[in-house]
Amino acid sequence: MIEKLSDEARSAALSGLPDWTHDAERDAITRQFRFADFSEAFAFMTRAALLAEKMDHHPEWFNVYNKVEVTLITHDCDGLSERDVAMAKAMDGFA
Amino acid sequence: MIEKLSDEARSAALSGLPDWTHDAERDAITRQFRFADFSEAFAFMTRAALLAEKMDHHPEWFNVYNKVEVTLITHDCDGLSERDVAMAKAMDGFA
Image 1 (tube, rainbow over the protein chains, first blue to last red):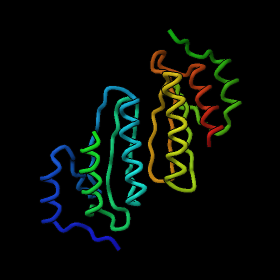
Image 2 (image 1 turned 60 degrees about the vertical axis):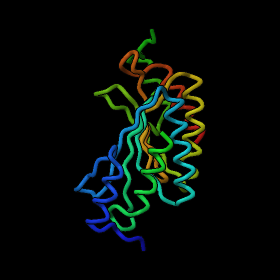
Image 3 (image 1 turned 90 degrees about the vertical axis):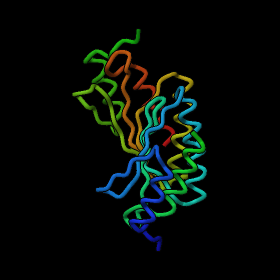
Image 4 (image 1 turned 135 degrees about the horizontal axis):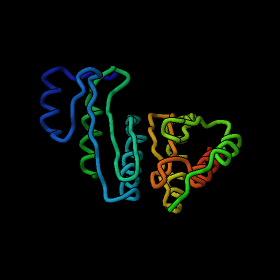
């Protein structure tokens, strides 16, 4: 079972993810990425997809042309876990 | 300029796309695809992305794990065009 972040751990994690917004209702984080075009956006999605499959931790995401809207949440614990923080940091690195 | 489908052409096209729903308000079509897992879902998205880039016609899509929700519309004519019909048929073939 994956553990949900404590309030303290969540606050610390969010301060390290300034481009992400905390959705308090779902206890999820969201970020909108913008790229030059679809090719760049889908290249980003492909890198993230490979990591998601490796981590067995998958994003909720919406894409239209150069925009990718990502929501990260850990369904197993119905809120944020370390996995979401790791995935968010990796996505920031890919973008 | 890409032309919007006439009412007759749209009806004919929709009858050939039984798994798609017409959103009359936007004059768009939508379909939800379901796969065995994320790997299959993203493989589908990758094939569709390559075609989208080749056609210069890009879907609006949302993915979570094994589900892909697709909306097709031609922004240039603010409604359905032949491009959407071609993309929908290709996606049906990929799935």
